[in-house]
Image 1 (cartoon, rainbow, N blue to C red):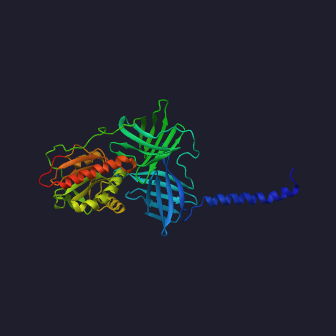
Image 2: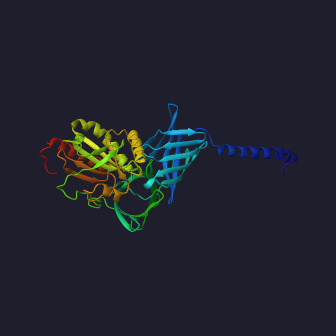
Length: 425
């Protein structure tokens, strides 16, 4: 039994305690003027569930910057503005934006992705400070081993796409990527939880979420979501010799004896053609892409220092940009920001909208455009010597290194040839 004194004290203290508790909770929920620096667990809400990625908030020289963290990749976002209790960030090289209300230990808002025909895809976003796990709070010690190379099939709307997954695993942490004939899914990171595995990535461009499980035959089954509108079922089996060679459509010249040419407008509206004096007697790398395309970002990051080194030797680069906007000025503005953020100095032309059928019509001498980027190498005599669909980015490891080595060897070979007497490639 409680004493009368305790009952009297309790009648006074309990209202004070309850009032203080609610005041504390209210304080936690009140927006603030600045984000708290630190490590956050960020997540986008896709149809398949939470799609987490690492987020670091830092203050550098009196300005806030963000870092998006996926496996070995850290994407710096310095276009960050604060107004009242709202944070707005524009991801480098993209038109995509993050808008969030700031609280003491969290951010809440959405990420807007610019899609085809200027449509906006708005994805719910949350981030909580001091949470470092990816998917599972509690890790298990007895997990399936998914490290290695997998022959994968992605099926969407009855269409099968061949893919190769490469994973590395340490305890329950798993990293890697999925390669397709038109590019890779960049730096995936996740966790294995018993026989289940989840992987995700978001670095300002496309958001991917994989949910997989190991069946009785030791194969992988599951689903993949890309943004709000794209969904595929996934099947994979171990195959250390899995390859994408010959798996996808190839782009070629319809008539090998014809000359590859084009005329499109630069960002100031001036017409530029491949037969212009600027490109005469040069080895020209023509890349088809768009500022919205993550693999095109990867290729541009490689081409920027390449161009600085090889331009004095006789190389020019022309990027034909197929953008999300049909309106020229909107497309040009997107490319201007892309150039600025990635440090691009080579020529960029507005070639059309991002639809591959429309891109094929814009370049009728080719058999078709099937993916971005597509890279066309033209020798000093104006002859097409190589066409490559896709780009093996840094997330693919040795595949990226091999692609770069082969590309540089081809360029060096073409530079050694004279303009009047090219050899067959």
